[in-house]
View 1: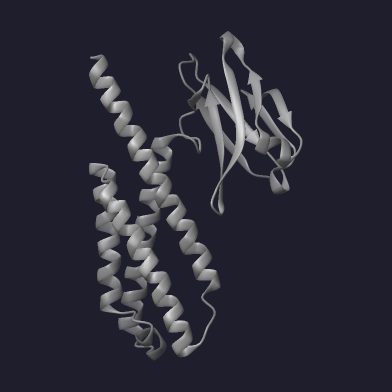
View 2 (view 1 turned 45 degrees about the vertical axis):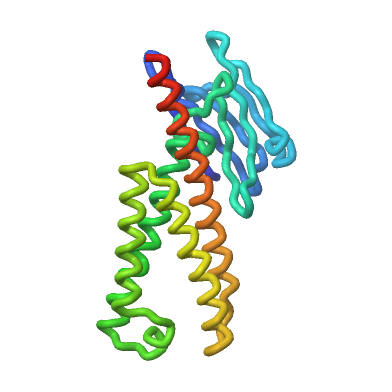
Length: 214
């Protein structure tokens, strides 16, 4: 049973919101500090969205959102994203950066293994020093996005993944194989990176608004 926990902001002592659900998002139960505040029986209801009244006049809105082929839980407290939830731009940015770090580390690992083991198939697929260099470039993009909130760096990463998709299909026609599984994963990564673009725009907008208020 999947379980996710979130800290409700501006509460002393801190209150913990917990969500539990079964297969295919069914029978979701919401509790705060172990006390049930409500439930959502079906995925259909969850996609439509439900509101729950909390203490001190607070309202929690829960909805299952679909972005391309990925799903995320939108949790809004009085209309604002709950920190750490799928609708929180800071969390979306962390996810995008984590995707790039994963791709980078994976490419470096494959590149090193290809050089050490000297497997001809891996060489044919272009794995080796080149793969390790590309992996290091992905790591650099992730670091640059994390530190500088660079939208251009995310667009560049998406472009590299799109090129990788075309390369995978080309290689599958040359040496055989089925690129569909890899295609699904790469499209999922692209979706997460695109959400990172929207997240950076929101974060920068919040920073500008805060500066204007000061």
